[in-house]
Amino acid sequence: RMKQRVKLNKCYQNAKSVQEYVYKLSKFWNMIGDVEDWQKVLCLWTGLNTSIQSELWKKEVNPGSSLFREVRNATEIIEIAHS
Image (cartoon, rainbow, N blue to C red):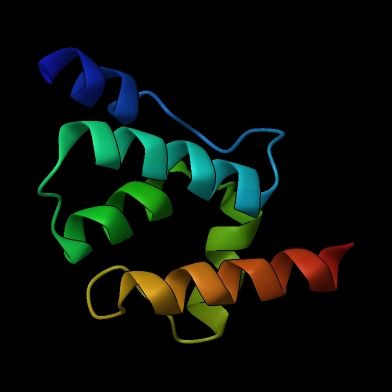
């Protein structure tokens, strides 16, 4: 479990699509178990490319008050808009 958390903390979007990145994070969360929504938001947010993070702030989506579902949906829309 601890090894999975270490790997999770080193997981970044980089060249992955948002969907691929969320899928990879979800695999870690399923292995770790019992991950709170706010932890998922923070993990997703900090691993996203900075251009997507900037767009999230503009959409008034932020890691302190947004649900994981909201952040994930907004990132997918931003990615589509950039393509």
